[in-house]
Structures are given as C-alpha cells and as structure tokens.
Image (cartoon, rainbow, N blue to C red; front, side):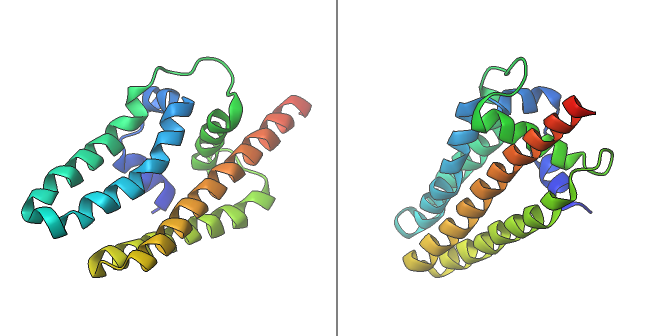
Length: 164
C-alpha cells in the first residue's frame, strides 16, 4: 500500500477538495494542525476527559481544511498552489512517471516527517516539551521541505510537458 495514497484516502480527497486545498490559506493553515493538536492533547493535564473536545475540534478542522477555501482556478501560482499540484503529480507517479531525481529525496523527506510524528507521539504520551518541539521540528520541517520538493517536481514536469 502506498502511504501517500493512504493519506489521500484517509482525508477523502477528490478533485474538488484538491482544487480548494490549492488555495494558499488552506496550505499555510495546515501548518497549525500539529501544534494545535499537541495543545489539545496536552490539555488532558488540565481538562481530563474533557480534552477530547479540543482534540475533536482539531481533527474536524484537519478534515474540513481542504474544503473550506474557494477553489483555485487556472494554472497553479505561488508556492502553495505549485506544491499542491506537485503533490497530485507525485500521487499519480505510477500512471505518469516523475523524474527519477525526485523519488529518493521525496521518500527521505517523508521519512523525516514520519520520524517526527513518532517523536511527537512519544512526547505527547510522556508530556515532554523538549521532545515535543523536536518532533514538531522534524514533522513540520520534513513536510515543508517535501512540499518545496513538490514545487520543484511540478516545475520540472510542467517544463517537460512544454518541451515535449
């Protein structure tokens, strides 16, 4: 199973959701999800079982986020739009090959993000603020770098389509 496709399915992303997710507000606001979720989970210290409320709110926001903005029309513009377009190309790499120079770096960056999520989860379990910051840095840094690589992938494939 392709972990990237699994993530897409878990978020129930269709063409309409992708068009809305290409909006810069949708992309940039996604970077708030992990810190907000950490705060919501950490709030169990103060709220006890009632911390499930803030956790649920963050999870609902995470699901709704790609659907809240207006759809982006026309060719992708800016870092967020091109990153989203590149991500769609990456997801379709079995049907349409991507340049080989992107494959290993994309998998490595995804691995960094996943490692960050593991550190993040352990930190939240142990309520370790230092470890939490490390996990956030790895997860968010890995994802941001991955999106940046998706911009590069989009530009490469757009250029190849123009040239070919």
